[in-house]
Length: 308
Length: 104
Image (cartoon, rainbow over all chains, first blue to last red; front, side, top):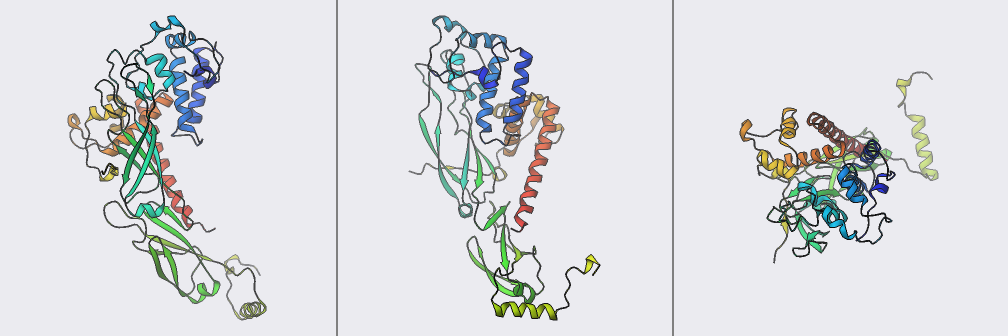
C-alpha cells in the first residue's frame, strides 16, 4: 500500500511536541474546514488533516504509526512483520471516514472481530442547468465506494453508479439527504446515507435568487423616456413587458410566476431589471437630433447638486 | 427497470427522527443536541422526553458535528458557531439577491 506521511500533512517534524502538533492542526483546520474555508479542495484536505491529527495526537497511535518506518509520501511499502499486534484500534463509528491507508494500518483486524460499523456517508455535488430545475431531473453519480472485503478484510474500491432523480423546485445550494444509499455497514450495522448538494449552473441571461430569477433588460434612452412595450425572454418562452415613460435604470418590473418552480406548487417570480444604454456610435442625423433635444430640454438630472 | 432513486427536499420530507436516531445519524452526543435545542438551533416537535426532529435537523446536526470535530467545540461553542453560520447563510442569500439587481 501507499504510505501517507502524516507529519508532512501537518507540516511538523517527527519530534514535534504534542503542543506543536495541536497548533499545527488548528492552523490547518482553520484553513481547510469546509464550513469556514474558501479553498477549492477544502473538503479533501480537511479529511487528510483530520486523519493525520487523529493519529499523531494520541501517543499510542503515534508510536504505532512511527513503527511503520519512514517512507516517502505515496511510496509503496509493507508494515514490519511484528507490527500485527498493534492493529485493531477501535475508532468507533467514524472509522469509515478515514482513508484506505488508515483502514489498513489501524482497522484491518477489527473487521474479523465482528466490529459493527455504520456505513460511510457519501457526499456529492450535483450541478444542474436552470432549465433542468423546471422539471424533475435525473442524473448519474459516480462513486468509488470503499467496501471491506469479507474474507481478506482488505478495503477495495469498486466503482459504483448511483442514479438519482432530483424533483422539480431545486434552488442553488439546496441540500438533500438520501437515507441508506451511502456505504455499506459492516457486520450488521446500518448503511450510510447519501448527501447531495445542488448547484445551479450559471446561465448567460438569468440570475437565480432562491426561486426568483433576475434578468437585466437594456433599453434605449427613447424607450425609457417615451415608454415602450418590449419582449423579453423567460425561462420557458417569452413575455411582453410595459415600460412606463420616465423609466429609470435599476427599476424592477415583476413578472409574477415566471421564476423557478417551487417544490409544492407555484413558481417564484422573474424580475426584469432595467438598464438604460446609450448608443455607442451615432450617425450625423442621430447626433443632430440628440443635440436639438439637449438644447430644447429643461431637464436637469443634477438639480439637487446645487451650484451652476 | 426503473432504478432511479427519488430524492425529496427536506421541507417536503415528513420523516421524523427521535433524539437517539439523530445522535446516531449525526454523530453528536445527547448533551450537544440538547444544547442546540436550548439555544434554538434545533426546534423539535413534542415533549422533552419524546422529541421529534425533522429532516432539516439532520443536515444542521451533521454540519454541527463537522464543526465540533474541526474546532474542538464545547456544546455551547457549537451552538454559537451554528448561530453565526446560519446568519452568514442568510446574509449570503441577501447578497446574492442584491447582486442580481446590480447592473453590468
